[in-house]
Image: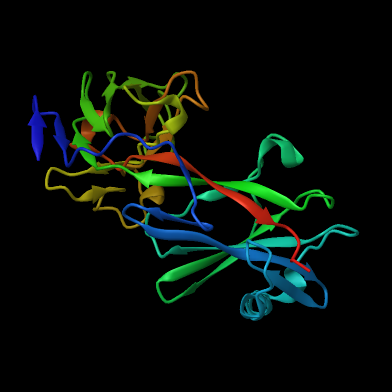
Length: 290
C-alpha cells in the first residue's frame, strides 16, 4: 500500500495493457476470472432446437441442455423471426462478481458491429451459461465474434479534491476541483446530481475504454450510499445521498464524475477501475456439418 501526498492509496500495480486477445479452440483464459468459452450454436424453431459445437460438429448434449433451459424460461416468451434463421450462441464463463462481457458481431455482418441481444442465462455450479441471439444473414456460413470483456484493475482510493491522482493500470487519473452543475444550485441535494469533478486519464490507451466505477467511502473504508441515519433517504428531508455517477469521454465532452452532494462531504472516493479487452473467437460455424 502506497500513499502519495495524503491523497492516493494504490493497492497494486498491474501489468501492461492487453487490449486484444484471440481464443484457442474457442476458449480463452482471463486472468482473475478463469476460462470463457463458446460452447456452440443452436437453431431454434417452434418445435425444438438443434445444436452443434463451434466447429460444426453435432452436439446432442448441448441440444438437450438448451432445450431444457428454454422451457424453464418459458417457450412462449421466444420471439422468432419469420423466414429467417433463429440462431442462439451458447457461451460459458465462471461465476464472476465483476460481471461478464458482451459478444459483438463483426462490422461487415449486419452493420457497424452490433452487440448480440441476450435471451437468458443459467448458473450451474460455478459456471454461468449465456444464450445470445445471432442475428446474421441467411447466406452466412461462418462468422468471427469478438468478446468485449471487462478486465479488472487494482482499486485505488483518493480524497475528492483538486489535483488528486490515482493509478489506473499503468496510467493515472487526475481530478479537477469540485464544482456545481449549472442550473442545479437550488435543487435538494438528496434528489439531484448537483456537483461534478472533471478528470483526465494519462498513459491510458484510448481503445482501452476505461471505466472508474467510483464509490464514496468513509474514513474507515466503509462504503457510503445514503446518510446512515436515514431509513428511506429520498423521503427524508436534508438526508444525504452519497451516490456517484460517471460520464466517460466517449459520451461527454469532458470525462467527469457526478455527485448528489458536495464531494467535499465525502472522505474518500474508491475507484474500482476496469478496461475492455477485445477477444476474437474466429471461424464459428453457423450450420452443422453434414
